[in-house]
Picture 1 (cartoon, rainbow, N blue to C red):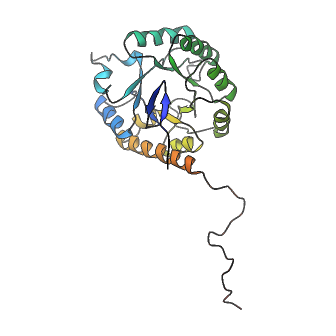
Picture 2: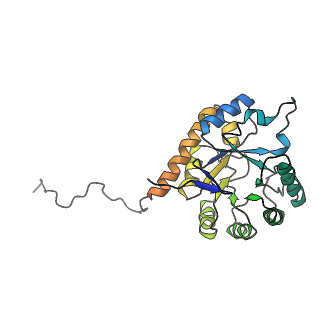
Picture 3: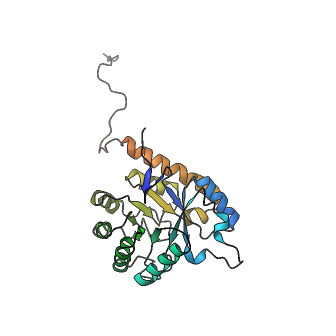
Length: 259
């Protein structure tokens, strides 16, 4: 079936899975998981680029193969997130930014007002802004109007693995905005990724679901296949749901051998 590539910031991606770099047992395990995922974009927290060992995280990411997506993880104000985005650009990491402005340390839910302010500022200064937000269709539309290139609603709290808790809000967001919708946070296993894609989302971003798996490389492969299967099912169009059974083999025209 014919499909188009995902386009973000003028770049095309055939993979609709974006992966992260945190919480892996080792950088070698991370590298293997990235390879198995088939992802073409990898998100990196600017504060983790330099490792305590003196190594650089970027030594384990082939930048000729992966597009780097710097993120503002750990920022709790709009000003802090904006400064972090500028630092990433000055460090040569480009204009793409996954924008996070966290409003609560326990739930890690976004501060949507700070997020909106930072989105507006960075978009005006030429950044391709990909804001992590809640699953509120009203805020999704406001972020689009503020210049966001993508809107990234959470499926569930960061690192929770609870899956897509409110698919109905995600569907309304898909109807409300014209920019790509990428589910970010909460995915726990392959079926969660498939559900997000079957809803019509343009992609899925995940980290802990892969890095915290017993076998991260195998889970990365599973996520790759789930995203592809969910996208294909969405494009194919599912059958209608019905309350009662419908025979898969029609009985019309079949002789009545009992008479």
